[in-house]
Length: 154
Image (cartoon, rainbow, N blue to C red; front, top):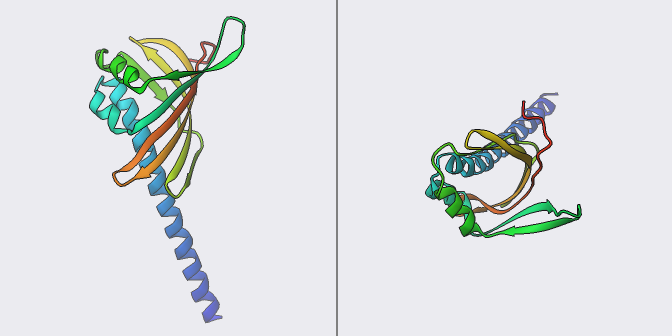
């Protein structure tokens, strides 16, 4: 019986340690995503760029006038320039963290959002991030989003 209690204690300790490590990794992933939005809101391109790898892919799922879905590629440099041209507070994207999945150096984040431009609601959708853990921490490698006007802006 004493041996069983010892094994149970060890198993619980391992489970708690594993959960703590996962939570820490999730917190680090969230911090990277939040850094992107901090950079956007403050029009700080240095902070913004620090959230991304050297060659990120940015895409948007869009619909044309014929209601056909297509994928629009965005150049990272154009995105950085747009943010740099804003005044602090003009580009305000508010997210909610949905699912976060991590497998070693790969993480996925699903994050519904609402985007406000110059203080007014502009659009909403979902961001899907793929992050990679490099020597200097988690970085966004891939971001694809949806955009629509019909959403609850609370």
